[in-house]
Image (tube, rainbow, N blue to C red; front, side):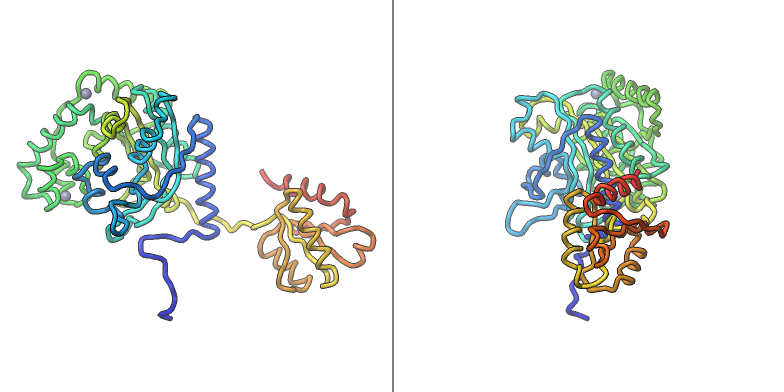
Length: 418
Ligand SMILES: [Zn+2]
Ligand SMILES: [Zn+2]
């Protein structure tokens, strides 16, 4: 069987019913985005390498090891959406006509490193970015949107973990506090983290290796937030409580990307195991400016669709259509085909057999596929300008005039949906 082709390692095929579940998550998310006034951005999969080095940071796992390079050029398959949206926002001068915007996006993201458990080469994000305000109310809104999407997907028990890194000054202070405390334990850290203490101490807090987590768990960080960042963070926490959004304050929560300032959050589920994040986000008040745009605050999040799918039960198979147009013999196939088209023009989801099945076999097919109605086209009925409508669930049938039946079917099938 060596001539069989396989999907590339670290990529996934979604086929029914999983693809239907995927689509439902996306549809519901879009509905929520629209309720909250977010507009869609559709951006390319390809970006310049430099955008992420500048945006995410030179010494992050993504830019150092995980970029999916496209051969021969400084072009990569996008690893995440935020830097890209910032690029688009600046390049297209969107800020010149609108000083405040809220965007969402859905689509594939890529990592170039060897795939491992819980880490895919191509994965899917649903994300949002709200650009142009420092208000903590906006942080709360963004968090609410993320939580609502998770909830609407049917995922229960997701936990919001939250922290504040503060402004650049506070982050520097936090970095040196971590550096100070972890230098004493450097023997305990992995090779990467020993390097990170020097290059990017905050990243040590993100290391998944047990020995590093142990070292980190014993460190104590005093308040490093300046008055205004403290105020921002605690106002947000208070507001979240008032909104009924429960959270866990995690003083050592950082995110692996350099652009974050102030609020950072992660939404996790215990059921995912060690890679427990469903999604994450936070504020990035300096990113837009650092990429050459105006000096404005922004906040966003991204949720992993594959992670959400892992948390949902296998969906039931759903019928692919509401109506099967069945024929009693070859002689009436063309009539049946015309009726099929008529139904579709009425907006009724309908299918027909293309395999010359007997009527009995067609009905069996409808039964097996869970198609609720069958319209039977027969010689005798056609002579009377009639068809038979069969309700498969109740095993009852009625005759209907050809002129009336599309309307009848439309009412029937709409009635059977929520
Ligand atoms: Zn500050
Ligand atoms: Zn480590």
